[in-house]
Image (cartoon, rainbow, N blue to C red; front, side, top):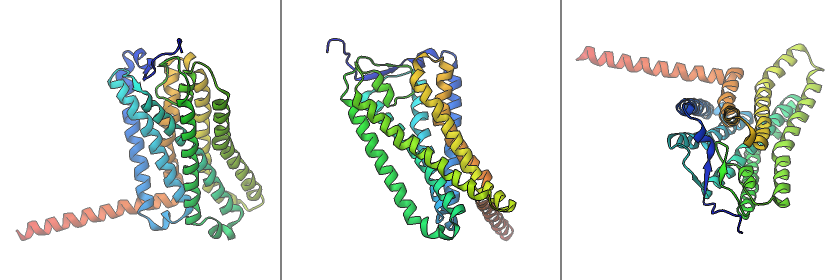
Length: 325
């Protein structure tokens, strides 16, 4: 106990090293966060206001993907903005553990969601006659509920295990907290936490990635036997999901490397990797789906026409009132 410290607060040393880049990073994070928030919520609004879209499993999963992105970016950006405004003000232990809890849920929910979307594409292309009996809205909602319950329980157990550690440090060279940050501050490593963390990584990252890859192996094996028109339609259907999966997988891969080497990385790399994991995927995912999916583009046009017509009627009413006056 003599080599331990009073670890009620965590000091983020990286913020004190930014110097003149503090304001630039603040404006950049604020802009990306607001744009990401608006785009994701707009896409959710477009889908939820169209009953024909929200009743379809793929769009239910897309809404969930957007909301997970909102949670991920909201987990990081306001905290970074707060630290930049207050020049790296220390964070209490409870706040750090809360960030670690939601970081685990964010990363796991994205991968599990992408796995469910890949399964939806598999059933749609490989078993089209059974699609409506397999992928029902109720069944998709139940799968999402199970995913979040299991993620919350596993993340809660991991955070609970971390709270039992004896810690010998309170300085962190990262932008926010996560489970590995707190574990690295412990006086000694414990096998239980290491094994449990590995099991969580396998269950919520490697297993969903394997399911996505397996689904697309089956999809391509079936599509290659069909006509060119069918191949083109299948490719258009799968492209948004594939791009999203590759984008988040690459961001997660660099995030894992970053977690292991964050103390040895330059500040610029430290910042870019964090933004690439928490901000860029939530920003790109709705843009990718909004551009690639025809049904969403049509719904956006309908909303635009509806707003235009409403504005035209309002202007006409105002003109009529003016004439009568």
